[in-house]
Structure formats: structure tokens, C-alpha cells
Length: 155
Image 1 (cartoon, one colour):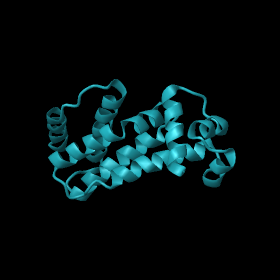
Image 2 (cartoon, one colour):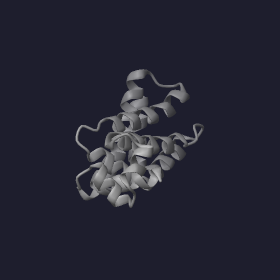
Image 3 (cartoon, rainbow, N blue to C red):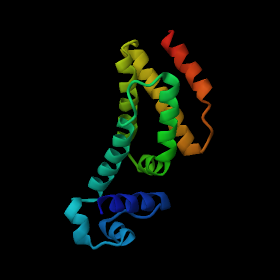
Image 4 (tube, one colour):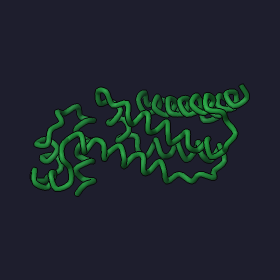
């Protein structure tokens, strides 16, 4: 039921509908009491939706090569495109962007090869590239992305 409420919220955001407990419960097919059994308010649902996205990202194996990591990351963004896009289009919702960047940064921290400034730059480049893909529905050139990342690493 929790996920159905989140899914209904994401769907309403993608449709540009008003977000309220009433609209969410109606879209999910539940009573308001069911909503309040799991969530305290609409903001709580949005935060849980972000957590759900980040949890999936955290499941990506840490010991992948850069190629495999980027391909897995691409698949993650592709499979979660609807949720990520909805959460990013909300006004003042920078937290998901920050969380995505932080998780990507973790992969490079484990490599223990890159200083903090390069690390931040790399994670921002990757996040922005994938978010452009989601927002504009453009293609991602993984080879070009790898080339940019290698240039950053060699600075």
C-alpha cells in the first residue's frame, strides 16, 4: 500500500495535478485513513519517494569497472526515469539532485584515486548528464561521458 501511494503521487506530479492527501488517496484508491497509517503528510510521501529512488541506486555494486558502473547507472536512470523526473520537477526540490550526486560520488570515493574537487566535479558531471537525458529525453553518449571523466581525472 505504501508503494501504491507513492506511485499515485508520482503519477499526479507527472500529470501536473494538485498534490493533496485527498487527490493522492483518490488516485491510489484508498481512504484518507490508509494514507495517514503510512504517511503524516504529502511532504512525507515525497521524501519516501526520494528514499525509494536512492535505495535502488545504492544497490549498484561498488566494485564495478567504470564502464560497467556507467552502464548500470544508465540503466538505473532509464528504469527510474518517471520517478526521478517527477521528483525533480517539483519546485524547490534540490534534495534528490544532491542525494543522487552524493551516491555517485561514493563510487569514486571507494576508488580512492581522486581528490575532493575532482570528485565533486565528476559526480556533478555524471548527475547532470543523466538528468539532461531524463529532462530532454536526449541520448546519452557513454563514450563521450567516459572521455570527459578521464579528462577530469587527469587534471
